[in-house]
Amino acid sequence: MSTASPTPVLAAASAWQRELARAITSPGELAAALGLPAASLAGAADASARFALRVPRGFVARMRPGDPRDPLLLQVLPLAQELAPVAGYGADPLQELGQMQPPGLLQKYHGRALLVASGACAINCRYCFRREFPYAEASVTPRTLAPVLQALAADAGIEEVILSGGDPLALSDQRLAALLGAIGRMPQVKRIRIHTRLPVVLPERVDAGLLGALGQASQPLVVVLHANHANELDDSVARAAAALAGAGATLLNQSVLLRGINDEAGTLAALSQRLFELGVLPYYLHLLDPVRGAAHFRVGERRARRILGAVAALLPGYLVPRLARERPGAPAKDILPPTLHNRRQVT
Ligand SMILES: *Cc1c(COP(=O)(O)O)cnc(C)c1O
Ligand code: SF4
Image (cartoon, rainbow, N blue to C red; front, side, top):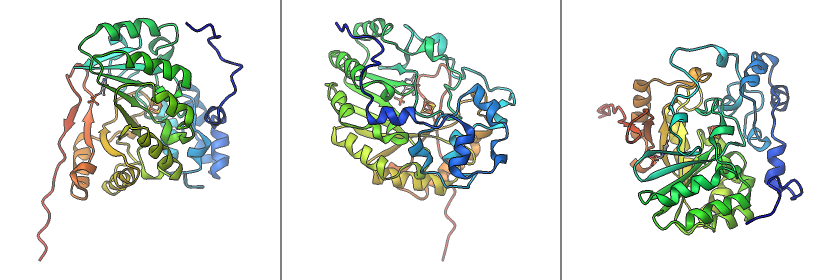
């Protein structure tokens, strides 16, 4: 039983928390940092009023100055296009809200339970399927954690607990350690998985405090990173990945297929190659979920399968991600086969 105040305002912030607090949240400041023309900000104010701009400075430093088409910039820059309504794009595309029982716990697939461990993220990705998600109601808070842990402990069928969000590594070391410790005491849970973008966008997060918290888990740990482009993976991310691997975690990556960002075979192949250099294997390449405001990122299914076919022709099979699509009510994610083209006979 802790008697500490629920808001540890007196605790000294660690380096990653200071970095998080310094994230850029103003479109004007982002444009100034990159030397971008004012024209690239058309609609940014309105779009960021609906879903805030948020990007850590270290991530901005990996963008090419002066390039309004930079693949990292396009993931975070609010655009006027987001405001245009598009048929079929809604607020809760996966119909997840009604499925949480108790709130914060989502069990769609056999043996795996997903816990919305935190509503916070270090970065706001414009294509995020949870951009309109009411985190305040849906994520686990210190107050709602007890029923979630009780439900998990009581369910003998759960072999894997997935901490997702938001970003579970946005939790403090203390809360993460407590959560992992509680799950660690559930004998039926054989694996703990963490879905996180923090080691990529704010690698400072992978510090001694985090590694200590991860040590509270008694089961094998799988960390699924989220990077969409090789330019995201600089040496600071490589060091973070090495530290996670050193702590015994199996490292995978998921990406979203995004028009104008990574919808070319060469770009995806370069991402896989760079991930491998970091000791990370590609896992899923997700088709965009039809969330309101993200329609301009869409790559159609046929084109996606052709792109993936071209990736498969370039790389060993273990570096080709699985092209995945969420379908509400399905027993697993749909995996779409790549469309392969016969190699032209060269003599
Ligand atoms: C994607 C997802 C999982 C994990 O699926 P895997 O195929 O095991 O990676 C689990 N629960 C929910 C709700 C998901 O959306
Ligand atoms: S880090 Fe993940 S959950 Fe957070 S905004 Fe980006 S895609 Fe969404």
